[in-house]
Length: 113
Figure 1 (cartoon, helix red, strand yellow):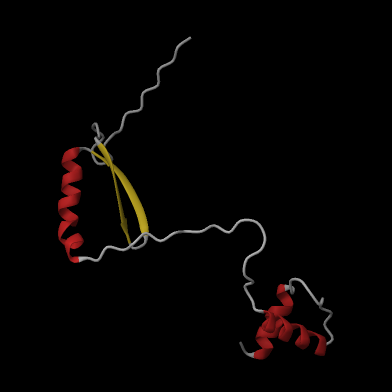
Figure 2: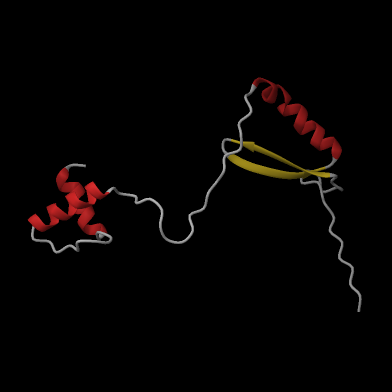
């Protein structure tokens, strides 16, 4: 059995046939909208004076952290200070690895940070 699937691009403003998808950004958010030629031109005309007066920014590369490794969120000096403080208060803490959040929070409160 044969099957034919057709996808129609519809104008997001009025629901009629659209010719293109227009992409734009504002306040750090990217948008896209499917428009007919008339609506696409209206959008471009509405933004034209703002675009002409603005500075174009290079796209920022977004990196995604994968797996383990990378830089520590807290430096070693800070971790050692928390461990030393915890031991001075009689709180058991390991020599290595992650410091439990409740210990770090208690240190922050008492250290006034």
